[in-house]
Length: 542
Image (cartoon, rainbow, N blue to C red; front, side, top):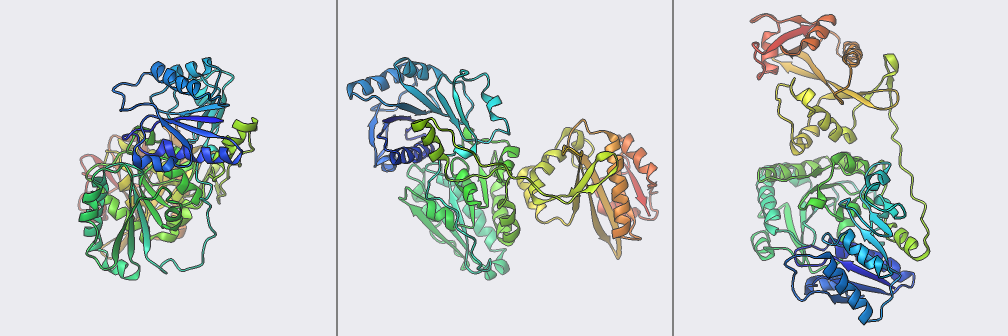
């Protein structure tokens, strides 16, 4: 027998219940009886646990959570009903190591499901978030030495029916582009309402693209969603012939919708891992603290579009991002099709194997990237930038060491960067050490002023410790390469007067200053309108 103590209030959403449900399914298949001890199930959330024995520990929401009181109430229930579980699984943000000590003290084994890296006193911890190649280090001082750690997305608790189907061979515009909009089981529908308002306005400007392929928005109305009736009444029709909306309500399983959609937009949470198992493109944003994630971590599992914060001003841009995904389907599908760490639907089975037999399943191996490299001096290497670099590119550009030398010294926001990335004609390259450590990005772009062409370019470091000589090697390669690719096209550039090292480097490579009113003066002021000659050197190179 397995007993689940699960976070289940009207304000907790459905994430804890759903992931425990998938683990309970796997345990039942191994002959285990399952009981759910809940806080206070609502009629809507009770549907998800209809196949199990459930009890409510509280008649009303506690004003203050107390681990000792809760543990005693849980133990009293077990004793009164003569239950002797092999494991007690706790998935609850307000029950901590103190609660676990009481349960273990009564003779039960405890498995804690956690994604906040809290301290524990239990027999096993399950945390399916990707936390690097050595995740055990994160919990080193937070659990007893004997605690078994089940860490990483290979243990993600997903629906076993969520199997990725083979790619079909239909052309991309064979049917409407389907966007699944969801805030999970709860959330405020007004968030989606603001987005849909911007989609309507944006759709009026996308008539040509929509004539080629329409847009179908499927809006998930979760059982705990606020203001659901308002969004249904206001947005039942878009008023644009090529855009339609349908509402999905009363469903406890969205496997079919996740499989069928072309793009998911909405809250992160557990759905993110289901999307990665399907390799579906998605734009996600955080609505809770446990959904805040380092973008570099998400890149590793192949999820590249995420906002840790969403502001009112972002909804117009978010609508543009959706249209951009539709117009770049093949490119974005290819981006989301690969990852360093794959996610499958066997996580619940792996955890159940451990709980029933103590067996630790063999985990899938990480994928290695294959690039075409150009070898440079001193063991350095260089390759063309790929779409999978977009977030590392942004993180590097936003380093203070780089911002201080930019025309715009403010950090660029992820949503603005994404909209720029898929529209820029810029060529960018990444230079690394032979061992793979990123050193810097260097870029160039062909521009036109009047009837003449010019080259502009730049570089920025990936780490504050990158040496100046690395830039010398990269710029030497770039100037030679562009001389082959664009013979007779001159360079124009601006250099901050505070950046003496870059000025010396450009002098070394033959750049000369542009005098006011002189040759190339119009070109440099046209291409760099924010760079005053008081603050910047104007330079050129033939």
